[in-house]
Length: 168
Image 1: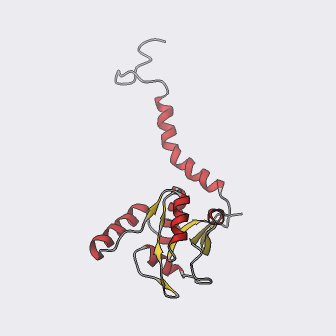
Image 2 (image 1 turned 45 degrees about the horizontal axis):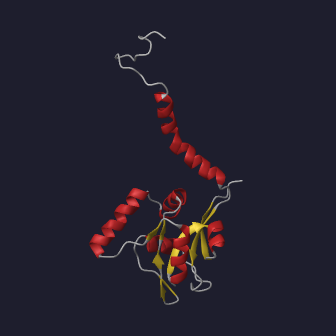
Image 3 (image 1 turned 90 degrees about the horizontal axis):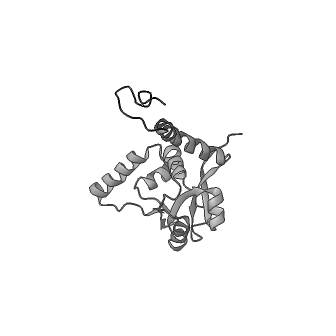
């Protein structure tokens, strides 16, 4: 190939395949979100707890939102403690968007503001499902969000459904 054809408009030498990499990186986030949504039709997001959680105790949507935004919520004399599940980024995004109605960046700013303004500790964050499940089993008031199939697999009590993908 002629040397002039291998160079770009400004005389720089172009690397073969660089444009392919740029296109791949541009399309990757959309593909990942689409693949995750496609992989879980009929997915159900639930609020889960350990075996000590009071039977039949439920929270309305405002109480769930209040709890995960730093408010105090009690059920049958038990003070509830939110636990953040960061093991699955898609799950976390669905929870933030569909239950708390905010972006991850806004949620993080909100938690930091509560810590500085009111001195409240930030909720514990778990990157591993097994460690999260163990924490929920050991702490009577601890609750977190999981996919329903994960909660069943980990042997956790499903307190209530928070959101479901009822697409056909």
